[in-house]
Figure 1 (tube, rainbow, N blue to C red):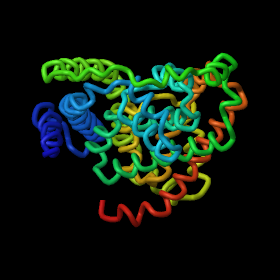
Figure 2: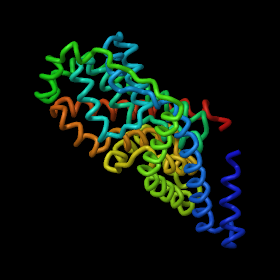
Figure 3: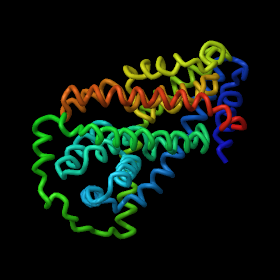
Figure 4: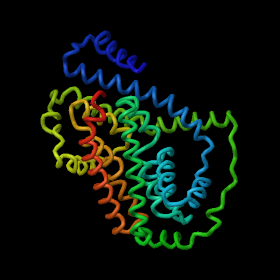
Length: 332
């Protein structure tokens, strides 16, 4: 089914424009047209369907639900909530404050905060459409693992001690009323449709420019970087390449929408899976803007701990995936 987008790209570049298929410009335009049409189609259809199911999600009810769970289940549910809600760094911080004020353990709250920018419906749609279900599943599993293990570690060191004073005070004084389950309204089918339609428009409005930027960069890499360059220079999976990719990703702030097409190009050019995913996660979850926002709710000590924890987690994940990736995806 997805081959139709490749056909559209071929029809336009060769049939309409009459370009030589062996030229770099043709390959770049083909990649750009195929990827953007595929992404936009998948975004519109799948985000609408996902939003229908999320139409009745009540953040306050989820917050109350999480507060009463044991830690291990709480880490998983916190990561799940982060994955199914369309929060970026900017909107995650207010939710973080709300969770902390409700005295939800800091580890559960951080599992949400870590997972939220890395995994959402847009990430799943893009990864599935561009890279296949195998890499999509791998990315989601690694994202969940980083969120849950990070949450457990921060609980173990009692990270609530290093929150900003106003938030630490709210955590200590959070009232039981904050945990009471709020009144829940079930939406009608018509209301769900209106919610899903509005959600689709809002997400599309927010991400379309990132699609163009990300696909444009990916297309340039695909069309103009010599075949085999990445495979020859960075494709041997040397241990140092993963931490370098993680460090390079820190200042290159983008969201998951913009970085996935770049991932596709890097993998097609021969960059190992682990190195590519480590770069992607660093870009969207350990960037400087992310930590500027977190400084509003965390003291420097906790901020440094979280930063180093994420860099270590992404590096270790990259090393492991570079070892097992060739076995897992030999036929992909």
